[in-house]
Image (tube, rainbow, N blue to C red; front, side):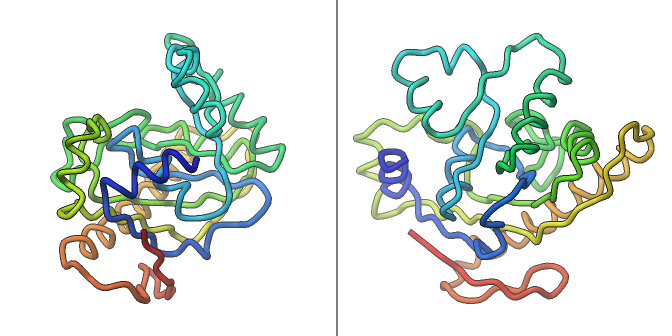
Length: 231
């Protein structure tokens, strides 16, 4: 964690809003947008609680990279297996009281159909929330380009004085009642509600980054006032 944090802070100007909304204990289903493989690391650096998230098994089995990923809370998922397998693993982690990251878009968005740069949400996060009853926390990060992170050391050093701003905004957790066998309409309704909240936070994060707003308080959609933290 310390190694990754140092590298990220040398390459980008990171800022977080609403870290005080992150539950300090108990199950939490985290639902952020996903434009880069660094999204989860940056989301996790904004608070003290280490999340768990899915990673391709072939990456986790890599000798050096795999060690860092496992220590960082990544659990393996086999490509080609059904989505239900990954959801079952995530459900077990939530039932044990952990903070689990599941991207509504399902994968990194390289070419976004949305003019805002966001992808199309899938139903996995909604199904997981209904199956466990865990609180859902929407999160949005703005400033990372697709596949950002493939930066050589020399390039990172050159960029340090002109580091790109990356802003992460945590939303208020909310929850829905547990449903053992939800209808398709129920799943789709929750999918859309989760994504609506992520989109709202993304718009706020983008505005903060583009306006070069100084650190301070921020009003979230809905009126909640949150504080900033930065690196």
